[in-house]
Image (cartoon, rainbow, N blue to C red; front, side):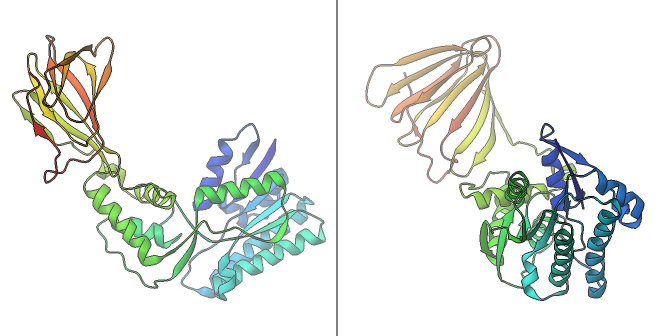
Length: 374
């Protein structure tokens, strides 16, 4: 079993990496790291001594004083090397740098200098080293106004703030789960390189990303519908967006209940291209339906109570009947197009039926034609 230590264990990438290590307990053991260890060289020495693999993530992304930002990032690498030398220990060392090394700014320069310090130590000690140059990372649990612009946009859209595009650049992006997979692959294959470029999974313009996130706000955050998630980038963005919601105040969301003399009808969920799911309660002796569709796919699932479902093809006489006891043997019937259909409660207790239909209901194009079954 490999023992892995992560500096910056409680940061954005560190949290995800630690979570994944803990899910693989048969293969890896996580050696806990305390932030204050960088201020206690003895504690840092003891920590590095326990690790077979060290992933150095700790760093400062933003600071009002750019010189201090540079100094702190370099000093973390220097302190780590000092602890390794004092312990006379040579673990496999991975360092998370950034493609911002190429931008000649204080953050990029600091990351480059730290990577070079760590690489030089590995050469002097004939030790394994991999310097990761990582594109812009996004995903759940990112800190707004710090980790990424995407995290900031998600926070603003879910907290009644107005996002603004300051620079409409194309961003090279990688989703956090994809980055974690690359890191584990490097560990398992023991890939060594002073400059290991992690490939970007996506490249998108900032304004285009904001448009997608704004659609999530309208469709999901405000209306409770699930948006189009066929594109993996949209799915990853959506999970990032959902994580930014203040769950304590946002949930639970109340359903709209439509009540009449028959019982109640409630729309549970609407999915962009997969229709909607609803349920109804029906009182004893009551019949629902008596209509047909020409294109819609519809399923009636009886989950409690006794029902009879009847079908009749339009302009024909034969009636097909199905009796279902949802309490003892839940079952479903799919409605063919051009077949008028209804469902009746033939028991003494309330009937509960779940409905799925492949389209979200549009009153302007309902594809619903009233026709008694018998």
